Image (cartoon, rainbow, N blue to C red):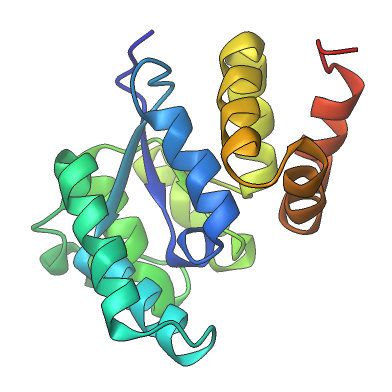
Length: 185
């Protein structure tokens, strides 16, 4: 499956390693449920947060950014700066909406839903979704693909229960959905 559904991933969802991994695996072939997008500002915020709040080294964040550039070369959105003043959402996050508008993204995935009120998004035909809501939508698009991706991720990172435990903090409804419909049962 290949999609042309463009989605802006906010820094707050890219900071969480397990969540970032799940989101990006769903965007990679063969799954390709959506096209991830981000800007230099989003990536700079991600890097800053990883280093200052989560104590990653600059070498670790440089490695992450390099991997993003290699595997998601088309994800980078440019030319949005001039649109920032036209955005009516929270001033701190206007660059995110501007990037969404420039690339034609239909969705912004963020934990900061309150920074993206519907009235500010409606003129641009963009919606903000929590990562929980977004992953549930991805599941309903292709349950088999989502289970396959999450199962592969779990096998590489400590097992199903460990990954579900980690995800239960960030995306609890998605975890409940996976547990409820687990084809392994």
